Amino acid sequence: MTYSTQTMWLEEGEKMMAMWPDVVRDIKESITDLDILDVSKWMEKVLNYNVPNGKKMRGLISIYTYKSLVPNEQLLEDDVRRIHILAWCVELMQAYFIIVDDIQDRSLLRRGQPCWYRYNDIGLGAINDGLILMSAMFYLIQKYFKEKEYYVNLLETFQNIIWKTVIGQSLDLISTNFGKKPNLNLFTMDRYNSLIKYKTAYYSFLLPATAAMHMAGIKDPEIFRQAETILLEMGHLFQVQDDYLSCFADSEICKDNTDIQEGKCTWLVVVALQRATPEQRKILEECYGVSEPEKVNRVKQLFTDLDLPNIYSIYEEETYNLLNVHIQQMSPGLPHSLFFNLLDRVYHRKS
Image 1 (cartoon, rainbow, N blue to C red):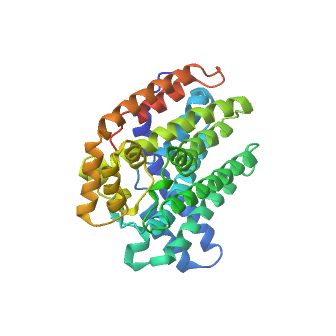
Image 2 (cartoon, rainbow, N blue to C red; image 1 turned 135 degrees about the vertical axis):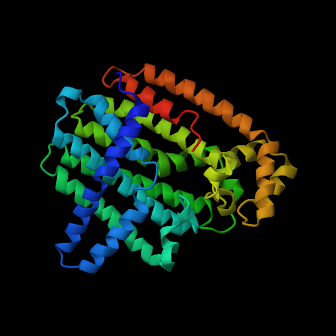
Image 3 (cartoon, one colour; image 1 turned 180 degrees about the horizontal axis):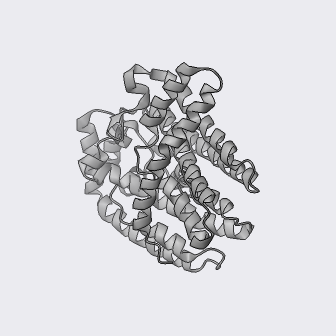
């Protein structure tokens, strides 16, 4: 396949944004039809503040997967429009999760601006805005896909992934002791692997790719099974990268992140606990999950003292090589280039 991922990311990102006003109009009209003009105006603000300003990685995975599976000569105009709608549905789900997650974590900033619940002191009313975003996602799926053969599969895919993701979010909240001082004895690698599988990997990689596979007419359960294995492994790598970048990326990239202050069960702290001496563990017991800048810096310094940047580099390289092997071993039901290109998109990312 000669279609460049980098070119696709740029071109399709622009095409997604060109369609965004249509998505907003569709959602607003669905509310206006209920004769509730105030909510329609409010919804436009909710949508524009929370949905289109991220990297749109998940939506673009849907588009790239679909265009990798359907030959150019078979790409109908209506289907191209639908795959962009599907991409925005994935991004609406992401926005819903973000709004709720920021409230639960008491986060301050998201993408360099105040979290939605902090915008003009919206507070817990933001929960309803998140629910509206999720409902708008299902409205668009019904509007554009109801007559399609794969409609039920698409609905079940979104519903199943939402279920798994909120289960993962629950595990995250339990792990952080609901915002209180965390119990570091719970921070095992097994727990971490379960947490990121359900909270991140399913909706970040499996959802956008498998939704596009349904749209492209893939039906073989074995193909979906093999794709799931690879996509969840990529999602695991992606979250470990996020954990690392939150601490060691340039300050401009990680300024919004508060994993240490919130006492999150991250790859960094789990590996640190595995390697720490009794004295170093005492530092983590005293400082991890505390918002005082001095204690946050002590944790970061401990991560450096334990050589975690080097351990991470080794992990990323080994995982990348292992994923390449797993992709090569897949049956020919899907183009291997699809997964190689997605992997290369993730490998050595800086943000």
